[in-house]
Length: 483
Image (tube, rainbow, N blue to C red; front, side):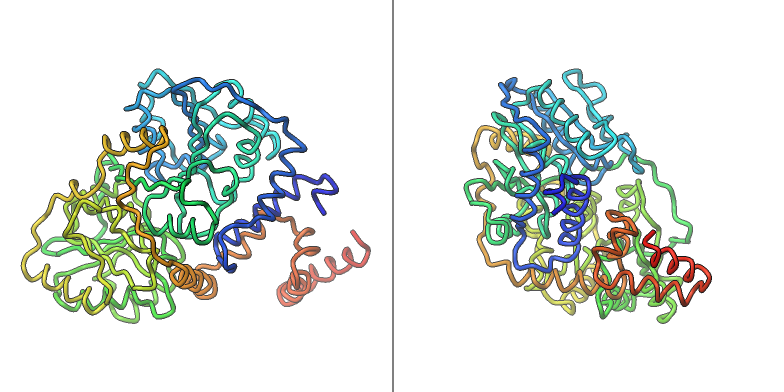
């Protein structure tokens, strides 16, 4: 209806809201939403003229929605493009960002064959037209898409260009994202994502490639700890807190079992999120001097160099963190339940015959105890991963239509793991990390929520009546007057 009324701003916000909700709660039996993608095509065909590009050979446009230092894969791809002597057109979604991108910019600071853009405009449509004008001016041969899952701006612009090959860098392989219909080549970092794309996104196998990544090591100096580590052995982990909070707090119960093995063991956790359940667990088990939360850290590599062991997070894991730990010489313990293939890290450590997933928590604790009792010896595990040069060479082959990492492709059914992941996301919303309301607030005004969200108006008035009866009467008056 919004599209028919040419209310494109509302239509785009509703598409982003729907995508955001599907990203957080994959409640459907597919990861492809044809209705949303068709709606974006329809809007783009109304507001944008088609562009047929005669590409400049060797020019690559890297569209980076995030622009977030040491997160995602921006720096890995920029380093590869430099090694390949490509002209780099780096485009950020917005200059108004709350996080740092100094490290990203420093990657190409002294690289002369580049241009850097920030999209300009007052709304989504103006941003979109600005992106299309950059493409028209720079005439890239390839577009690398480093997209947020609900990116409507990039979708519409990239939908209207012809003559350029478009590559999706699939960061969030485990959940929903927009963009299936604008992909010419889909770059996965492991087989799990490839299987999801083929089985639930309907991306044909000839479009899919695997290109594992390597970690970018922060150059920040060690910022210290605010607790005593003398004579202690440090078990370390890090993530957004929702990745380690399930109904039974299984991750922390397992850490607790490890701490019982030796009074000199402590657990240090980096990351952020709702920590209420974690704090309650610490107090309940009298672990105030054994478990320490240190927040988000830019000096992660240096922190890990002070640690002795790394426990990959679960029920949801993080690949880059495990790789940084391996680079710091830590033994990595990774628990992968048979129905949680979204945690499988083997493809990121494909060169190592010794890296293994542990499929039982008792075995995880046992393996840890053996390593601890034998005296952990630091190991250099850099050779277990793809390196910077190999990454660049493989990307170049992908540009030429080849499939250099085909040997990593393992076809297996991932539907049960997908369903398990969805259950965890709903559990997280209900128990630890509610984001539904803030998501609605991000995309819809109060009046729009009253009109569109079932029960919102009733719940709003009930809450207002409980908390502020004078304000309730004023709101009710305005509602009855139609204001």
